[in-house]
Image (cartoon, rainbow over all chains, first blue to last red):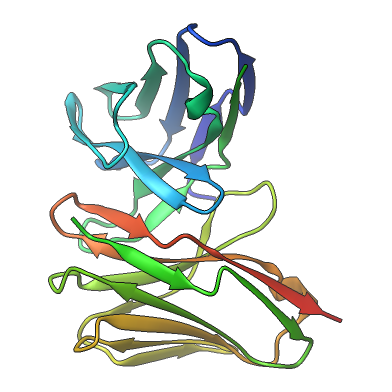
Length: 113
Length: 112
């Protein structure tokens, strides 16, 4: 158990509504990541953070924003959800900074109708 | 950035047989290559990894090989068991993004 909690675990929402997913860690790691998982695409990086208020874009960042106001929490926001953002979202932390080993949360399944 | 391709997308073997999953990567600067196993409804979990200064690594029934010149790496599972059935992902460390880039996944089914 890497001490990662994602919430909510399941959410159904309608097109055009804002959605925020939360990732909480208990181990004070600097790096945190948001990935989305879709059939045939594996896991694709949305945004990542390398410290409080330090974030950067991944390969599929359009339509998403993130915030990290404290070390333990990394929030992913969909300002206006679209059906193409229906996916399973995974948060990850980087364990040791001299490796690339990532530890993943259990995922948040989002359905946009 | 890094690009990782993974084959096959599905693999069905008989219990006791071996399974091999192959990946290629694009960035010659990548130096870390993990493999993750994902069971239904769970997050991916690291099962083995290899760094670019090593050609092969084994851990009981699983092994990973790396060919830096050809930019490909493979996962080998011997004596497969039904509990090995899962989706497996390869990944490569993207030194620019400081993140892992993943392959598209292989669904392994071990028939009892």
